[in-house]
Length: 263
Ligand code: DGL
Image 1 (tube, rainbow, N blue to C red):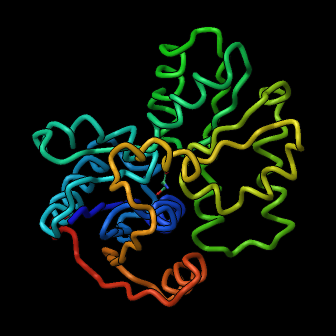
Image 2: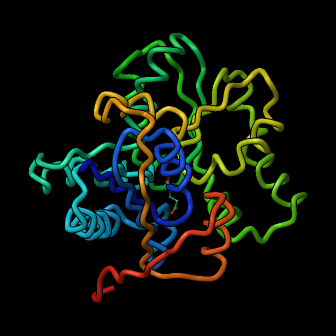
């Protein structure tokens, strides 16, 4: 039995989970959305590490042999810790390394933009890893903290949402970019709106599309195998249920699992 655990602070990691689920090649996917601690993007590294350890313990107890950190903020803060803590017996895959590999292979000498949460951008991890891979790439990074609430709450009118996205992306900083990395797994949900604002000349790079190729070597060589999926969250709201059902395209059963008592 190959079980893959996928986690994020909320709905964003579903973009990655859905793409893995549709790809198949494993037996079961277990998703954990840490709604009780959303958003991760403005938490300290220490807090995100603590949540990530608890979630991983839960996923390992459920029998997962691979953990996909489907959150850039947690990938930036907790990858090394989880690898160490899980003693390298469990495969830990994050969303940053597959994207960095893709950019280094496909955009030599280019200007590449990256948007993400404050935690991800301030960590400097994309900037550092891309430059380590190819120092001819010019990375333009910007924290776009309002985008997660816009997506999670879906509160804002389409016009207001467009204005917020424009406010971030129409900066001189992004004038010459050939590609924009969606450095937060929530952002693919508004990918079309981002693409409309930046125009066809800018390729939008979405980790939910890139991670499949990266995981390929680790999966069962039988893509017809249909995986089953279980969904857990550390807190639940009707809004999250509706949004998750809509996003996955079928009625999912989300069970609550409380993560910790100390926070
Ligand atoms: N989806 C997450 C990420 O990729 C985190 C969003 C948040 O909770 O702030 O960074």
